Image (cartoon, rainbow, N blue to C red):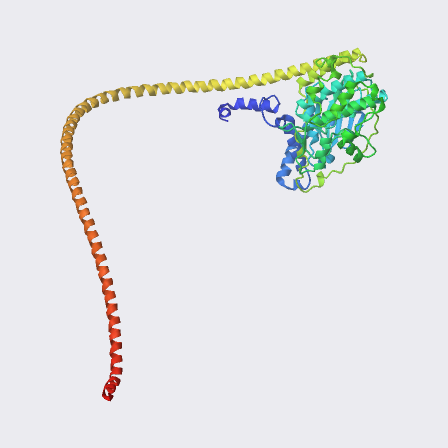
Length: 621
């Protein structure tokens, strides 16, 4: 932060501009949200939320809507939108939407357009699959993954404009060969699938729905992995923790079923191994014409998958299949810990003859015949579907927030990627025997136009950068001029200070002379004081020794007196003891005397009583 604070406003503005244009090297999380398209998504979401009758009763909201009304119309027309494309045919339909072949009206480029209904995507809790699908195709640089050209949205739908591959999909290819491919073809397509799946894993994602329907064939006959709607980003431990139902029943891995059955509160996880399981299912289907665990009901299919060690069987025609291919299938349809991964697959005996580095330039066993770039003959036909959208937006009475999940979805492919794709497309056109020279020439001109547009943008950016730098230099020059004037003023002040300092130096020298004399006098006084102190210390030492002797003598007397005291105390103790003994003896004597007196008294009483009788007796005698 300290370094940024020292940068000039012009420099920070240039860096901010680069960030908005997507050309910055800043390592920010979800940097695409502050890209031009992301910021425009935010503006459109805010405007659409505010542009309702009930909310416009607030004067501030009404002022905001009126202020941006014309601008929003212009921005909407400038952004990629549905009016830029002409729908040629529907080639696929699913739960969340459909896939159409479209032609860009301005350039004639042909794409596949995936339409996702917003209302149905929002109804799926904890599912942001459209973000994963968009990010994978936008970030991908792999020749094995379908790439994204544009992504845009309106109030009802999300639109993904992707590469169109006129060769159809692996399912249609299987149908051309009665659902069973020769082993040489299996080896080729499985090898390409290994590279395609590994390239997705290298990006930090797992597909979770590998099946023939999602394996497309381009115009040259090579495969392209598609439909990343079930994909999930791996966490830091290369795992997925999710209980959401994903995939297709016949192709889903047992560990995915375990996580699905565990429930939302569970921490069950699985990794990229689930895609290699699906590869094993696809390999089985290529060889034997059906999936190994399929049944009449989904429940029984899932039960077969969970008990795969017992339910995995091979038909009688397996004897005609090589042991290497059977071994590959068995080792893919195994527990995750024992299942083959990328490192083991590339060295498997089935792929001994595969040139992994140049397989993309190898002639494929099947090259589709296409009549043009928009040929859809290799896809099934679908009837158009009419849907009535009941928008709640105009009748709402509060901020709904339903547009917020889709902020950052919009995407426009950079010109650099566009040129690379056109170059790759030209190479494929040249390699494909079904491509006409007019298509190659048109594509070449298109690439030249885009290249020139790129140069114009680069020159415009360079011009803006140079203008910014010139402004910065002019600002710096003005600052330097001010610095020079300041330095001159400082020099005059410094000269005055030097003169003042020289005068002060003279005064200081005089003071130093006075101080020197004063110091000599002080030193003499200090010397005299030191001598006096030493004499006083000696006298104090003598007195201290005398006091010490007196103290020792006093200590001796004290000890003698203490001894006498001890003797006196001892004698006193003996006296006390003797006195106690005498008192005890006196007490005993008194007690004996009392007893004698008592006996004497008793005798006297007896005598007084008996004497009259004795006297009478004597008289009688």
